[in-house]
Image (cartoon, rainbow, N blue to C red; front, side, top):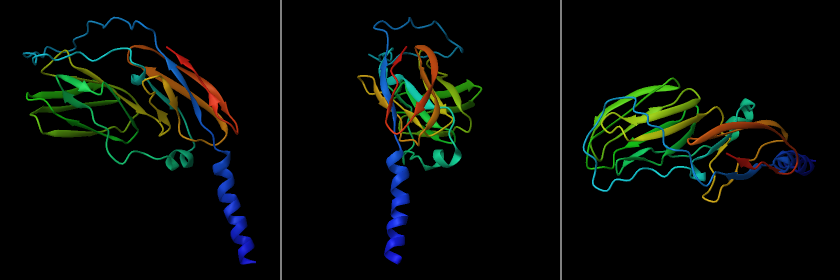
Length: 219
């Protein structure tokens, strides 16, 4: 009797996992990204580092895709990275250009340059000012609300980065060739959102059944 109950218990554990599927697809970006807007929200300035380069624009990997809403039990079961994502100050740029973190997540801001930086944001989703600090030091910020956080350096007005705080843990970043996939989810109807710093955002309702659903996104 006990062995039969054990088999029955194992069956119910396996069936939900087997019914899970993924939403996946490919991101396509225009061959020529839009022109960089002339936007300087503050008066900070300093001498540029020798040979510092502006961040590449229009890269497929800068896109973020996520599920807007999930049942709490499903969302909490999804894995989160053990280490904090980092938005580093390197070569007088923010590296990587885009960081994504779910609500409640923490981002580290290490300074890897031989000069001072002063990282700040005035975005409604999270306002902060980390003050001026040198190479080798790092500051951290927690993000309690979802939304886009634009990040700047008060000393170097040509530096700009982006932190997208997603409302759920179900998010994805495309690879260099544009391929992406969200974590496994139970069957249901999901609102898939996508965003890129250089192109208009969008979303689509997707019905996920027993097999994977393919959603190709063109910016």
